[in-house]
Length: 234
Image 1 (cartoon, rainbow, N blue to C red):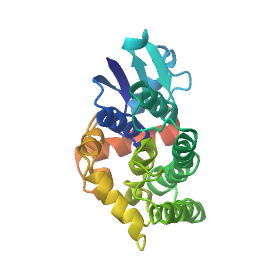
Image 2 (image 1 turned 90 degrees about the vertical axis):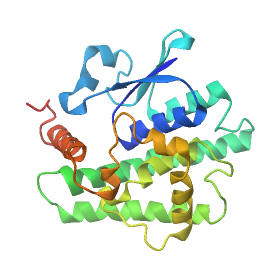
Image 3 (image 1 turned 180 degrees about the vertical axis):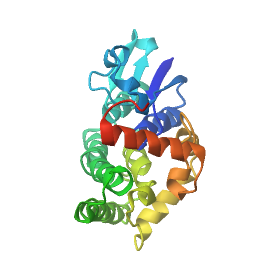
């Protein structure tokens, strides 16, 4: 059994979608980021960096794994799925996983901060991060014009990139005119494990369609509390 410590963010969804795709049994411990649960000593013993997601693999002697990409690799290797074992296939998959971790995630994450949560609107900064997100989308589009999936076969690279790209509206970025990316996004969305995984620990589908509801409003409130004060919300 695996315990997943997570919150409804793209990085959190990378873990839950991977677990769903692999069919591994797991329990969920939702972490309230606005209350800084991830900074408490008990959680820092699992992830010294105080970030979600993290897992504890109880079948491996309560082994903790943190960092979303490392977590995905660990689960793929544990099951022998979603990560090729041949040198080239493995490298190709990890390259596209690192592309998300070093590019898509940081750029969209900063777009989210300055477009949605920062107390002032600094337009050149917003333009910078939204524009770089769009540039990275074109890289994905070009790659997906060459292959059905990011690394050839369906893999953790697809999960990692999709969990972020699917929230493009929240970042204020555009996917217009990128047909291969659109085809891939539709294919990902059709997968039952993807549909289920992005509802863990709570369904924030409204972050994609931007409809207003309590879960969305609570998410924004918590995110602004972290950005503006770095302290738990009172």
